[in-house]
Length: 546
Image 1: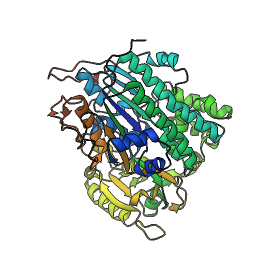
Image 2: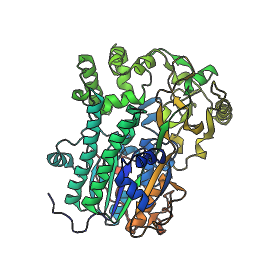
Image 3: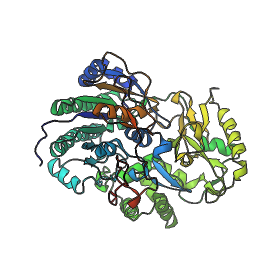
Image 4: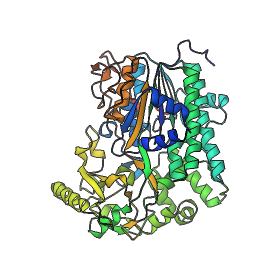
């Protein structure tokens, strides 16, 4: 182990997924989170606007790059190539992270459990990936995971599944504690200027135990204790707490977009193939070891899990694995063990190649047109693109709930929401549920409306708080958004903000200088990923990603 640093962490960013005024106010009132309450009271704080879509896999890259999804390229949990899909990872984030930018200014960073950060690129410091990485992720530097588990033997990316609620909550709390232990170890070893620790299970608890406030208090109480330990252990000069989105009750309906589009002749359906599984089933299969799925011992399921993991390592997309399982007659028995939605998708699904438009994935909050020359089996002539899209806008804007309320408060062309080199990878239309109170679904289940599958889900407003020697703590944070976090970190450590960052430093910190940085090598992957220079010279290779 390296000797402890004499200086400590200069700036610490603590990410609390889904923390928002609605949640924090209730926790503060009940005195569940005294450390966070004291910090929010003493520092400058306020609401933090998320982005579209306000979901973890896209919003955290926006936070740590300071650019919108049209520039960093991640719009949801899944990447699409034609009609095929796979889970996103850090290679899909095509912009430099704040720790890479700081590294080029001679500053070290330690990053623990941040979503969509694996496999990491080289930079001065250490990184242990978080959500969407495999359970045994590639870390930076090479071999770090083994070293970390020597020091923190129970460190996991995902809490194991449990047979009871109390045991599951204990796993959540253990994961929270392990983030602090990992960060302590890595700070001692790497003496970083910037630290970033993220807590994901404070979002997970709402999805798994919606409306169970005792469970929420159990998890957030552990996060509060972890936050206090981080401050005590490292005494950072500047501290930021930020969430990627909010969370709350959904009192409206589940609106099945593809059923609505099918009724209007835009979506064609088929009973061939395995269909598009839900994100929950994908996540369960991808992120849990066989030994961690309660008492499940079904041999077919275990064989399928091994096949999926082996295929993923070989570069085969998850979509093709599902198709193969269907071809050999295993899709349905596997689905019966893993997720009922998988069975439904296998019996009736969107026929992407025959449809005019469809929702691929509800997390994207979008509808995609099936354009000739762009999609493998497009049916919409490019010359008709604008007119068809306008028709779709009109059709979706007219959607009303059984209670007579609008389903969507806005239906927007993608270029009205995103800008940058990857706008064309976004859905053609972005749909914004009214009040984020309607639960969108891409599933085909016969009826257009139903009770929400999840009674709690994401809302578009999170929270932010900041304290430090250069922070005007007498002021409230105003008009802040997730894109403002990276420029604020630049301000806190005295580094110029790249001109291409979309955000601005929070109003309570000194306005940092703007500077032209060399562009990200948008070719992506392998040798195309190069170290960012700051002196105008040619970029140097940073090595292949494992």
